[in-house]
Image (tube, rainbow, N blue to C red; front, side):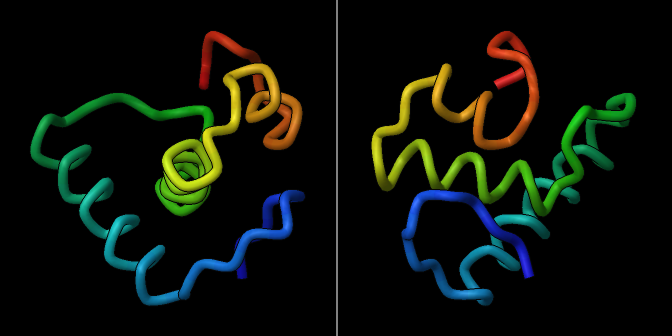
Amino acid sequence: MLSYPSGMTVSSRALGVLSDALRAHRNQRRTRWRKLPHGRQALLVVAHLRKGETYADLACGFTIGTSTV
């Protein structure tokens, strides 16, 4: 289970679909490693789109740098 300190609810299926799409896109583009695994990146995207979280808030919540967000 993935968590983000915001109190939002997201179905595991929705996160799974987005996570699978991110994984497929990374494999297709043969990108290098990322700071966040595809599951955490999916959660970050949902938090930004659904709650309108700022990059600074997301960086703090995911313990990554603002430029990484």
